Each structure stands twice: as C-alpha cells, then as structure tokens.
Length: 290
Ligand SMILES: CSC[C@H]1O[C@H](OP(=O)(O)O)[C@H](O)[C@@H]1O
Ligand SMILES: Nc1ncnc2[nH]cnc12
Image (cartoon, rainbow, N blue to C red; front, side, top):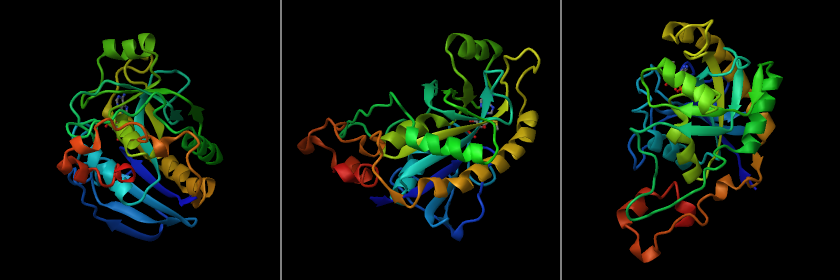
C-alpha cells in the first residue's frame, strides 16, 4: 500500500479549489522548466491533494504553450499518484449537452506544436497508450459526478486539436461524422501521454460548454457563450473533486490496470548507452526504473 495523493489539473474556468486543510501554494521547480503556476496543496477528508491551474491563475498560458512536461513532472515530484484533468470541451453529440460531464476514455491526438515525451536521444522509451486513461480513476470520477447530481456520460473520445482558433465547420463535421469523436478540446494531449510515461493514473472529465460548430440549431462556437456555461460547470467540477478523496481513500493499492508500472518494459536504451544529462532530468518521472 502507498499513500494516495490526488492531483487535479483545472482547465479553463477552474483556477482554484476550496476546502483544503493546510492549504498552501507551493512553487515547484523542474528540469523541464516552470509549471503553469504554483501548486495548491493540502488535505481533504484526510487525503493529500494537489491542485494545478493548467493555464495559470489569470489564464496566462495558451493551449500550445502550457508547459505540459513541467506540469506532470511537478505533480510526480510532489508525490502525486493520481491525476484528474477537468477540462472545458465542445460536444459532437446531441445527447452530450452543455452542462453535462463526460468521463473521457479515448483520445485522437491532432496536436502538432508541443513536446510530447520526457524521453528521447540518450534514453528511448515506448509506453502503451492503447488505453490512455485509468478505469479505476474514471469510475471514481463517474461516481463522484453522479453523487453530485451532475448529468454524466461514461466513456467518450476526446479530439485534441492544436488551437487556439476553434475548428472550421468542415473539421467539426469530419471529427464527428467520420472520426467518431465525442468531445473536442485543446489540452488533454500530450498531457495524458506524459502522465502515462510518469506512471501516473490519469482520468479526464470533460465539462461540456458548447456544440462546437456542427449543430444546425446552435450555429458556430463562440467564446462568450462558452464562458457563460463555464462558470456553472466550474462549480460542478469543484463539487465533483470534493467527493474524490472519500471515494479513493488514503491507502492506495497498486493500479489494477498497471498505470503505475507503465515504464517496466518500456525503456530500450541500454544502461551503458544512456545520456547522463537526460537521465538526471528523468529523476522524478522515471526514478523508480533508473
Ligand atoms: C475556453 S474555450 C477554449 C479553451 O478551453 C479549454 O481549455 P481546458 O482544456 O484547459 O479546459 C480548451 O482546451 C481551450 O484551451
Ligand atoms: N468547441 C471547442 N473546441 C475546442 N476546445 C473547446 N473548449 C471548449 N469548447 C471547445
């Protein structure tokens, strides 16, 4: 048994959480640069918590410039075991309406201007992301959402686009009709891939704000309408998060899906061929294996 430490990465509209005992914003330095912001730490129902606003307080970072590697490294460095991403998303499904939440379980990665791995020349690793989210953590998020009275959909494919502009109508229709995506956002990739490399359980809660641009009755996506829905969603998101510690508990059994052992057979570079400088940077992410 290890101690649970729940990390929450708050997306657009979710820049802090309340109710933590011993709440303190801590600055964490990483070999990958500075995270998006300081990290709010404390305990909730006796469970350690860490909250990181993805875009920084005041919404400073764009989806392309969020320091994804520093964020995941910092959470790992703080001893987090589980990461819950809470994000604003557009919907490609009539039934997934604005105000509803979706427990995402798959991704299509269309991002192209971001660093996507902690590994590279001097230490090559290939982890599986066939199942990029943790079912145990996703189940807890679904239960928490239901307990909070939120309309929640279990399972959905998240299309990660580069942004910052929203999709064209042709793209919106293609993602929905040909590619089978359910929701769209700009940030969960490479975040989920990096969490897997860092052997962290990762779940993604999509808070629906709009129907993107495909819906004949809703016209094109518009940030003013998104922000209006975002505020109500953020309150629901905080309510969901507040229920997670009681559901997950302070004592943590190994992940039954192997998220916390993802690197076990993934590193291909032989020990004598590894780059000492890169190995030093991997001290938190891959420390268990080095
Ligand atoms: C507020 S509209 C677009 C913006 O919102 C989402 O952010 P996050 O995923 O961090 O909640 C989306 O990905 C865009 O960054
Ligand atoms: N329609 C949309 N496309 C991309 N990111 C979003 N975030 C919220 N709504 C979105």
